[in-house]
Each structure stands twice: as C-alpha cells, then as structure tokens.
Image (cartoon, rainbow, N blue to C red):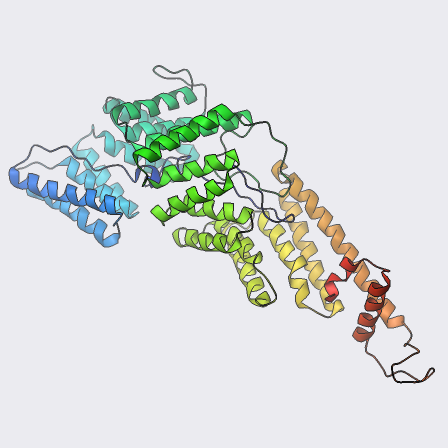
Length: 509
C-alpha cells in the first residue's frame, strides 16, 4: 500500500505497506484461511454421518482456537478421510469429506496434500465449485500473472457452478478482477472494477458476516481513493520509499472514508478477524493517523502472529518514526514466517543500523551487514541493498578505523557501492531521487578523501613545534610520528576554525 518515509534522510528503501487482500490468497491466506469446511450433511448412514460431523466439529473448533499445527492438521484430515472410507463400504465416497481433508492440510500449508485431495474431490464431483476454486488459486500461485486470465475464467466457472452462492469464489474473483482492471465487463457490469464490486456485494448478500468480503470491499474503496492521487493498483510492494516524497495529487477523501467505514462495521461484527485490522491500518496511514495505524497492525499481528503482512506493516510504520527496536522485533517475526523475504532482511538491517551506539558499535555494524548480505543473496539485482550498504560503510564502518590513512580505502568501498547502486537503478525512473542522492554522496566522499589526504601531506611536511611545555625556546622537540602530528595539526585547525568542525568527523573529533 502507501509508501512510508524512512526515518533517515540518507536511506533508500523499497518498501510499502501490504494488504493481504491485494492478491488472491494462495492457501488462501488470511482473508479466507483456505475457505470454510463443507458443512452440508451428505446422504449417508447414521454411523458415517456421526464420523463426518465429529470431524467437522473438530475443524470448526481448531479454526476458532487457531490451534492448527502439522499434527492437528493431519489428525483432522484423517478424521474426514475415515468418514469417507466408512462410506466406501456402501460403495460410494463422500466428496465433501475429501475436500475438507484437503482444507485441513491447507491450514498448515501442506499444499501437496491439499491439492491431492482437492483434485480427488473434483474427480468424485466434477461440479464441486469449492474444489475448483481452490485449484484455480493454486494455479495462480504457481503461474503468477501469466495464469491471471485462466484463473479468472476458472473462478467465473466456479461461481456459475455454485449459482453465485460460493462466497470464497466471488471474493477471490473480485481480487483478480481488481488486479486486471481491464475494460472487460460481465453480467451487470461494464468493466473489471465494476464487476469486482458487484461480486463482493454478491458475497455479502449470501453471507453478510463473511469477513473476507468486508475486507476486500474496504480494499476496493482504498484503491479507488488512491487512484485520484495517481497511486491506484499499488497494493503490493512496488512503490519506492525515499527521504524525498514526491508531490502527489490529493487522495479521494470520500472513497477513503468509505473504506474506513467498511472496516469499522466489519470490526464490530468480528473484532478477532486479523485481516480487517491490517486493512484498517493501511487506511489510517492514508489518513495520517500513524498512531492508530500502529495499533491496528499490532492488533492484526497479535491476533495471528503468523500474519506476515501485518508483521511487515507494523515493522515499516515503526521504522518510519524511529521505533527501531519494535521494528527489529517485527521484522524478525516476519522472517520466521518467510526466511527468504528480501524486504524483511533489508528492513531488519535498517532497524539494527538505527540502534548503533558506542556500546554496541562493532556488534550491530556486523549484524546490519549480515542482514544486507542476506538481502543481497535473496535478490542480488535489487539496487536498494547497495545504497544502504554504502551508507553503513560511509557513516559507520569508517569510524571503526582511527588511522586516517586506513579510512581512505573504506571510503573508496562506499563510493564503489554507490556507483553499483547507480548502475543498477539509473534505468528505473522510480529510483531517480535515490540516484541523485547517491551522486551527492560520492561527491561528499571525494571531498572527505581530499581533506584527509591533504591533512596527511600537511602533517608530514609540518615542521616540529618550536615551543614545548616545560622546555626552552629553541630546544629540539621530542620526535612525533605522522599520526600524532596530523592529530595535533587537525586540533589546531579546529580550534582556530580554519576548517568546519564537521570535516573532522572521520578523525574522531
């Protein structure tokens, strides 16, 4: 969602807040949690019905308590499959039980087993719109945008098969239609955005308590609000965050207030639904209510510690106002969920860098560098890593060396990192401000090196002082090495204000 300004005037960071509803959930995420178990009672014997109902009650209980773990998922799936096996003795399987077994595995992200049973359910019942919906979402997860059109068609067929009663299919179809945002129309709508809104409304007409539909409706209004400011369709992570915010058109306040109203209504209906709090946080950011946004993201993350987007948003907002420790904790929590996420590693590096002080200098500089190395390993072509490593080198690593001669090669390393950033970023207009600032930093480095080298040369050529404390004028002074002479010379310059005090940074003044 909306980009946040970083707390550093010197930082370039590819970050934006993320909405869990901006992409079709793939498991299916925190918007739909993979859908609800099929509760219709199959036409079976009382014994089989008892087994099926017990498995269904256990599923609902696990959902309510968020008690899912691999062992619980396996046990619940087996309970459904046992009901199906019991009915096999009567010569017929239960597609609903097989589908629910897939959902149980999906709750623990066991996608291989989930897909296996969704496919089996579809074979047992070719009209199983729920199985079609799940398999369509898996196809989109695996194929990405190249599978957008085929996924939309599959979901449209699932909606038709369900006679517009499958709320999950309707909401996921709306998500994809918002992403495509084409002029293609449908029944009762003239383009994708109108169709998306209509499908969300259809879902709410079927179930006025279906929280994923409320969440997607809020995101719909939020995206429409941002369109007026030229930022529509940026729910993902494509926006650049820099210290210099570009001038934007005014956001559509009416659409933004509608989004906030939808969230408020949804939270009254179900205050324990994590995704709606995350979306409310995104809206509060747009409204400029940062404290409220922080609380919303924290609530979402507290309700579901495995909610990656909420952890990332909570971290990003804290980072924006120098809440470095909270940001660090949230980024670490996010990395437990997705260990190879580039933005989480980069954000963690900045959160650690913001906490560097004299008492932890060496340890935290190394920790920050480790996270930058991890980010670079995940995405070696992303420019931001090089810019932020340049800052860490120019502003921190150089201070670890007291010998002025030893600082020069470190500054050269920083210069090379900024040059690498420029080479990788120059072709992308969204990095224009960062490229400009990288060039300014290179100029600063060259000026610093010139000052250092001139100081070293002057110190080497400077005659020994005539007067020595405790000695007589004309006495030969005790020998001094080059570094002591340079420090003495710099101190004299600082006291006489012949150079700006800021220029003495690299020498420990």
